[in-house]
Length: 187
Image 1 (cartoon, rainbow, N blue to C red):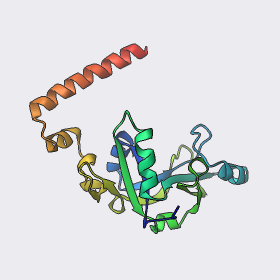
Image 2 (cartoon, rainbow, N blue to C red):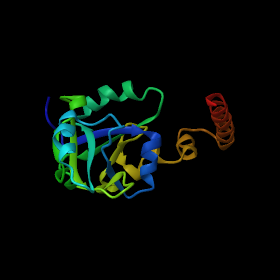
Image 3 (cartoon, rainbow, N blue to C red):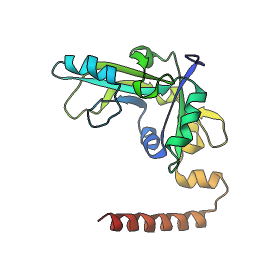
């Protein structure tokens, strides 16, 4: 497999990606034992050598578009997913250690670093400015993260696809009923 086509790719659920819209930077999450997503080699080599006040921040990217597409549907069948791409020579990625992701060999990179970690801190201090992130939009076109229709509100997305406002209000009502039912059944 070619190591790069000029970009690296990742996807997140729409809910996770939508939280990014409110931030100017996409950051690497703190590695933790309960997430179960760490690289085994990274954990073996690094967690034992962490000093007090340090943490491991890591983020995984597919190496090429084809690899991301192969996994895209299998992982998010019940949730709208947002496929994103970043230049593989992005300065933030260049500041991290890169190695094969143990969970996704040989199709993905794991980027990571050991850095200062404040109590309750869940994300790296630095990251990728959203202006440097492109999203595969609903029409199959790559657009800047904040310009993509898929990243707009549900009303805007649905109106952009031809839904009328009255239908949107009914959909919100039905969605609210469904959420209330799920909460009641979970008790």
